[in-house]
Length: 140
Image 1 (cartoon, rainbow, N blue to C red):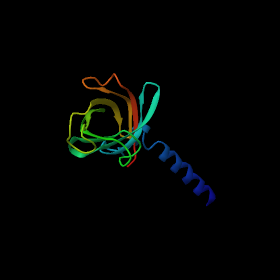
Image 2 (image 1 turned 60 degrees about the vertical axis):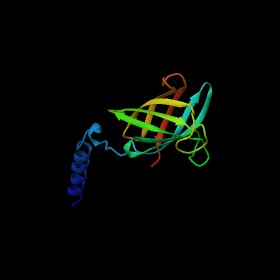
Image 3 (image 1 turned 45 degrees about the vertical axis):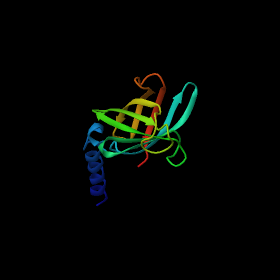
Image 4 (image 1 turned 90 degrees about the vertical axis):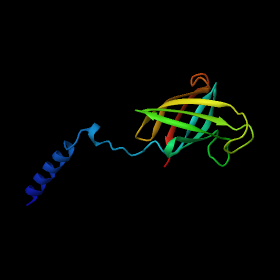
């Protein structure tokens, strides 16, 4: 009886170890839409960065670690393949959609379905390269 159980354990272990290749077993777990936190660089300084990427192309950006304690900007985003791009504008008239002529920024990063935005660059429009770098992790 013990030998049958041992044989079963060996067969089961062998079956499960070869049942799928690593590339085939990775599931899409994080869509692009959601709440993202990370950091961006500005010269030698590193600062907190928060995104809310909404369905339909709306983007909310917080220049800090949370929406409630940061300056907020509004904009839009696109995803082509795994390239995430966006633009956002800080309102000249204070926090909230609309308002006066604030600064507009562009960004671009590589998105992966494991909940990461990497190799990100940002800049003042019309460039996404003259500001600094950023990286983000999806938190929900």
